[in-house]
Structures are given as C-alpha cells and as structure tokens.
Length: 91
Image: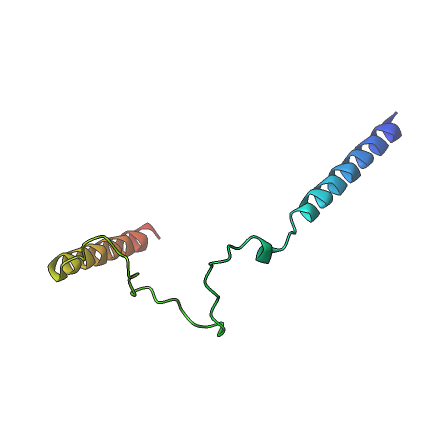
C-alpha cells in the first residue's frame, strides 16, 4: 500500500510540474508583438538615463514656485535625516 501511495504521489508531482511547464511555455510570446506602433524607441546606449527633469510639451499643470520647491526639498531632507537617525537607533 505504501508503495502505491508513493507512486501516486510521484505521478501527481510529475503531472503538476509538467502542467506548470506547459503553462509557463505558453506565456513566452514575443514582447515586440505587444508594443504599440507609436511607442518610442529604446536608447541605443545601455547606460544612459532617461531625462527625468524634462517636462512634456503638453503639460497642463502649473509649475511649482521655487519657494514651494525649496520647502518640499527641505521637508524631504528632514524626513530622510529622521529615518537615518531612527535606523541607527534601531540597530
């Protein structure tokens, strides 16, 4: 009886692994087929960074004033410093 259960368990494991392999094999479609036609091309050089400070031409939102930007940056720096102190105290 024990040998039969071991055989059934082995067959169940093999069937599960086989079905997972088939399921994952079905997910390997070409990504190029799924990209829209108007998508931007990727940069040729692998180490280049995207321009994060360049704004799109059709931006409808108002630009943050320099005073507000300085205030936000100061708040973020203060939060970073508080987290660094809390991390040192926690260790």
